[in-house]
Length: 165
Image (cartoon, rainbow, N blue to C red; front, side):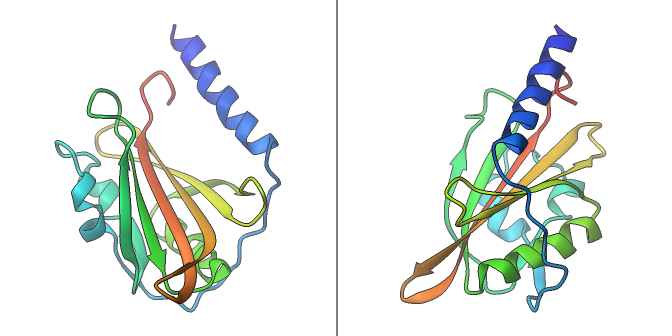
């Protein structure tokens, strides 16, 4: 069962990488960081994600929340996402995460184009004091909100099960 779970998880990951083209991440940004924890509070559940995961996520200054999704529904491993808006260009936001994620202890696994090629995704992981591996997927797509040109940012965080890790 354990091997099947690992194989299934790796299979989905490899399929997602091979179905999208790899992109080179920008190496700089003009955006300043602020902790993501305040924007994440509506989807914290029973101490998840743990403090060492949540405290090591940031968003660009000026980011606003536009919605949340609870994929785990409280019945499985933590998997939730925040829909955000950043009043900055897509590549500047992408450069922000290319710098911030590794600086906060995340290891980048992949960077790809989204379906249709308008957006970009970055997949990163880190280990936590809860002994689990945590994944973060950042998706950035050009957008306009309230007449302001910027970037729609989706930040998904999930805990890998023991079978997947």
